[in-house]
Length: 288
Image 1: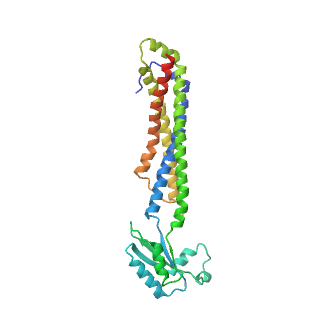
Image 2: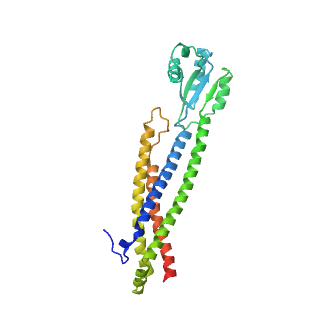
Image 3: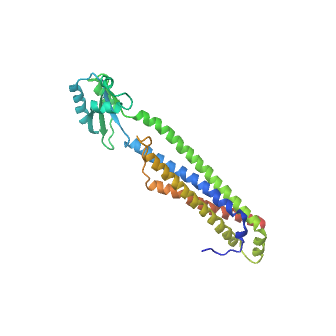
């Protein structure tokens, strides 16, 4: 239900500008905000061990009895949930996509691999473990996956910083767009404002009239922006979760994602309301 106004906003040709401007702003802002939350969630899972892959590699000429001794040592470690030897058949199956299957792959000096699953929350000094195993098995290598994790963390943090800078620019653009719309409304309805002010209308009444109008336009634009952003986010999520061989990390769109999605349109409406009140109040003070 529309509230009647003493200002003829229906004749205001500036009404189209703010909704479309804020639709674009909220769209980009929502993508940036949700992106920050998703990246933080994925980094947390990586660093928390959800993507941890501890692999112990032994030279191919290691005796079976020695391999079993290493396996027993690892399973006795209080920070290890379980450790198992990856069979030669599994190794060949993993290598087949990269090497032609046949007698050649069976003749390769494939090293022994032990897959280690650490206990959740356990802290294990893998460097010390490798040194201890090396005393009995020269050439042993413990791969904790920290190298690739560190390489991925830096670009992810760079993305988050860039997204925060984009959000700052988006907020400035929102303030500028709302200010322009408010000043345009004052200029278009200047004569009407002066008449109703002479009839006894107070500045706060005029401010509320324009504030309600601009906030409504901001809300409509924000709704369009968040709907488009939601469609984009879920489309990206669908594609990344169905890519064969999982080239992208799987993320869960939890409470943080929903809060981030609706935070930007709400912020845009709040910025519009406060900006209009300040701009119109200052302009009225100098006008009347």
